[in-house]
Length: 494
Ligand SMILES: [Zn+2]
Image (cartoon, rainbow, N blue to C red; front, top):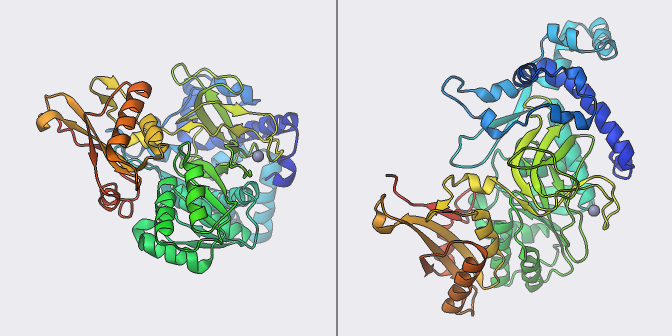
């Protein structure tokens, strides 16, 4: 692995040359010989591994997507085709002598069993996480011991980009689950020796348990899902707890709505924490790594700092799949350069990015690695609800979430889709459940929401219903669900 200290300041030309070399090697020595899915795909499209010489050659290959991984009638375990599966013969055929010699040396000095162990460490799955989303089948993604080492390395890099000091005490309040976010933080702690307490999130200890742990630990950093972090801090402020030890809040697993950073800061101030850095991270199951914004005094959206030696990101037109230019909007496509076990290639993330990729040095920290614009629309939040057609209009629920999440009058919300009179043949109804901020008149909030929906989206709520904060929190399952229930489709099926 390349030294991160050097890489993060190296020139774009150097980074590009490195990526070309790594990509070539990866395709020839790993992907093509060992991946059943991608070997077939290369052959189907008449592409030879030698033809992938530079990052620009990637476009010779078609894009992959989540659909390729989902089980079908004929192949209930399609995900297995994406696991690298070497055997002695394919290793002999695929690897150059320079790669085989160390293995031969090991065989000569320590015997054949030692070679088998080395190959096992590199390739055999020993850990897994799942893609989230309730409507689609979860897809498992496997890691080998080699990939776990990478997870340590990306953990170290995250800590570096986020400027977390080694003496910091970190409260990891991501839900305890086989999901990347929780484990990336766990391995970051393991890799850097930083003190990390993983509470498991609201579902495990409840918000009161989490707050007790955070205050007792006198945590310097708080890391979790935006909605739950906000909920926790609101509670801490209401109970007049002392959280003055907190200096950093890291948000992950979901998009950070505009205005969220400021709201978090003002709640923190009520608990005695001042001058706190709040910033976001971006990761997804299939990447098996996460990226972070760098901290700034005004909590700017600085973009997610990438690791050019571990992955190539492209931005493509979501309709045509054609690559877009620097800084242009589009869908993020991911290609790993050092993955083992479950491996995707030219993989459509489903995440749309406004402002695309940036190659100029970060104006805040000066790092020269490419950055993904912070303005991401994560498809994952839509996957929970496949039917987006409401009242005959296609509604971007993510936009609804951003609008509601950034209105200061609204404390919590849920959108419910119903059919009029619960008749499956009747028209759709959109009901908006709201808990308003204390001291804010319900009708004032309702009027503002209606006006915002009318002007920004093409759909209006049929009804706005109000709930107190506590029943609302129960409704969205803030402390009982793995993921907050923001959208409920209660439409009976015809
Ligand atoms: Zn930066």
